[in-house]
Amino acid sequence: MPGSGVGVLVLRRLEDAPADGDPVRAVIRGTAVTNDGSGKVGFTAPGVDQQTAAITEAWAAAGLEPSAAQYVEAHVTGTELGDRIELEAASAAFAGGRAGDVRIGSVKSNIGHADAAAGAAALIKTVLMLENATLAPTVDVTRPVTALRDSPPRLVTEAEKWPVRAGLPRLAGVTSVGIGGTNVHVVVQEAPEQRTRPGSPAHPLVLPLSARTEHQLAALADRLARRLREADAPSLADVAHTLRTGRVAMPVRGYVVAAGAREAADKLTSLAGGRRDTVTDPRGEAWLSGEEVTWPALDGDVRRVSLPTYPFAGESYGALTPRRPATADRTAEAPDLPSPTPASAPSPSRSPSPSPSPENELASKVAELVIEALELNGAPDLEKTYFEAGGDSLTAVHLAGRLRDELGIDVPIQLFLEPITLKDMTNRIVETKQNGDADGALDTLLSEFEAES
Image (cartoon, rainbow, N blue to C red; front, side, top):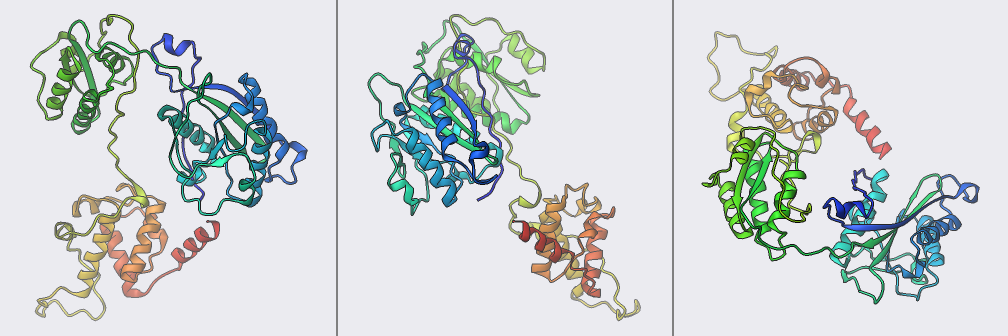
């Protein structure tokens, strides 16, 4: 499947990272880039020779033979031609090794084609496998291509322990290709063994935390507390160093003072519950007040360590926002909008009907859909314009589709672009239903989307 993605990796020279106390997750041993040039049969068609060259050159740059590889993360175009050529190139490059010693797989079966981020995703997956000493399976493979049955790489279809070899670290290759004939190969090695740190500092330490909201601060404190209770928790000095030097200072802040991991975990749990530490610290108090704090140097050799990530709010926007189920409360939020008076409406002198008119009922249903699609708080938000309420073109298509499918109203897309309030827009939508006006814009737009997909 097609897709888009973003991949971020931080690269440092191997001698610099440990010196600055940065954790090393994997080592890039060698890289190579080639291009098929005139050797390819077409602009989008890959070639065997230069893919093979990229692999062998990368392993040469690493000072290793390709036969040292244990795993290859393949690019995989998902086409008969592309996959066959990539397997042929891999087989030629790794021919020096014994058949079956090299495993092969691809992250694309998990996330699809990630466009420009495909290579980064493949490298990130490989680093994670090296960190966990586990070969992750290529999922949903039911019928491997014929070429795979005769090539040295063996497809990983089930999670396996990454084997250890005498005299060699765990080693992998990552292949990525680009349209136009560019071939890239990267040799990745497991990280060197990290030294262990003593568990408790000589004196209590301040652990500062910050977030954008109180809820996120509580979640962050809870995550860190759980991490410090684990058997392989990092040293408290390393945790304090990481929180002080590896985190952005945000407006909502808290801190605890502790001399050991157990004490710190208990106090962080209390902080997550809204209770401040009874032990105060002058620098901690300055931190709480929003000042820029110069933390004192920590004893011994400290390093930054991997800690629980920031608890993002996880809010969704636009047409892909999950639909919230209609409830009695949300139904009550729907405004009682006046509907346009039809030509056959009774005169004001007549007694009103005890039941709501079809027009008012339709207006309420339209308002409910608008509130739900735009994730509004209720009827007062209908005084905003479509764009003030956070609407966009994708949400317009989504909302127009629901109006057509659920209420039988074919709404001109241009209506969402007009500078009118949502309340007025709702009335206009009801008028569209009554008058039978429709320009087929939604059908045209959806047809264009389907043709391009």
